[in-house]
Length: 113
Image (tube, rainbow, N blue to C red; front, side, top):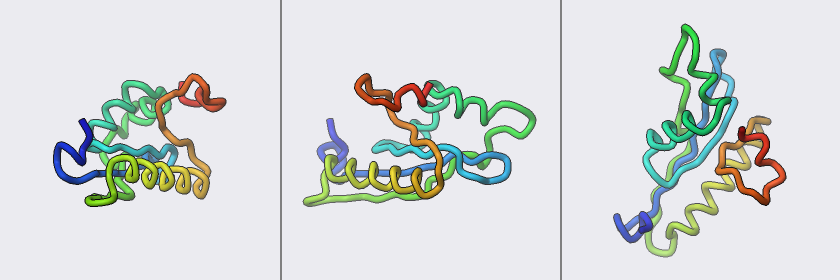
């Protein structure tokens, strides 16, 4: 069931993972709570997991950089399109990788392993 149907509004958030120097390394988006997305990224993406290993662990590594709530004509489909556009723009501008589910037809899915 969609956020708009469950809660009467759509939700979108874009977040980044930053390295020890504070430079963004990965960007991702979610329609759910960002904490749930962090847990999924940690489980699925070795690059994210590697950032949390070592002496200087997790605090401050993940940052929500954009969030929005939509209603009326801005449903889940529209929010998804905006969220993906924000992720793409940040990834291109900062020259970092986008975290997204691997799609079998995507020529970039090998980068997500």
